[in-house]
Length: 255
Image (cartoon, rainbow, N blue to C red):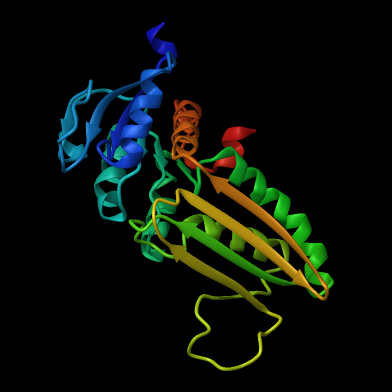
């Protein structure tokens, strides 16, 4: 029976998402958090918590990382040294860090997704067909994302993933524009605008706007609870258990 349980190391265990995932796993008979990693150990957890992942002694089938880019080096080093797959959920990575993840995936299995929700990953596919057709018809494309006032990175990783999905479908003809305040000119047809809103306790909202002449088509995803991201991360941890080295995304997990 124990072989059927996915043993997880939760990095960032005392953050909002870490605690959300802890609660989800507590109700899941197929998963168990065997150790947590967090600089702040003010929460009462049912598992040991370490300040650094290098201190973890428990054996695990997967690491869920919902911390911050600053911990990436230690997480990947531990994963490679101990052959433990990683579900990498943090956002705001630099281009160098993204390459570091790619390089690490040659040695250990990694699930990397800008957003762990089922709905967003379905939307990533849906907007491709729309983008191709509507782009041909001259529609302008804008993405507006909204998050709570504690989110540090902007635009969100999900907004960039949505933009990349559109751009790949359209032969990468678009240039991302984040700020028009410094330039006084009409909108270029090759622009893909991405705007970020930060306020209150908004969990996450992403809107893709296809604006044509006399008509507008909008795709929108709203997250009402962080639990949707936590559930996806646990599903990904079960999926990645025992997988060969490689880089996987949530679309593969859900398929």
